[in-house]
Length: 115
Image (cartoon, rainbow, N blue to C red; front, side):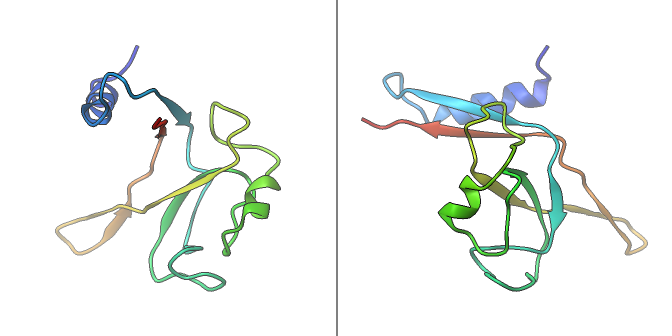
């Protein structure tokens, strides 16, 4: 059974898709890891910010086609998807000034196939 937040997410996704546009959704389980790596903004160095990472097991600090293809497994429900996806890490700030990591428990990515 889908949760209400999942249904809202799917509805928001579909709002931008017209009836004639084919698409599919790839689901990912729990994030592979949390890291201060961002191969696009800060390649080959430690990033100034934190990400959750899902997808291919070969996530590296420099993004290349070869890195993606070298993955031995994926968090995706489509095993051929060797892409990596990373999202900024969220934190909850308490009134006393401390922070707590907000764990990501699933990710959906989608592909819109334009004609």
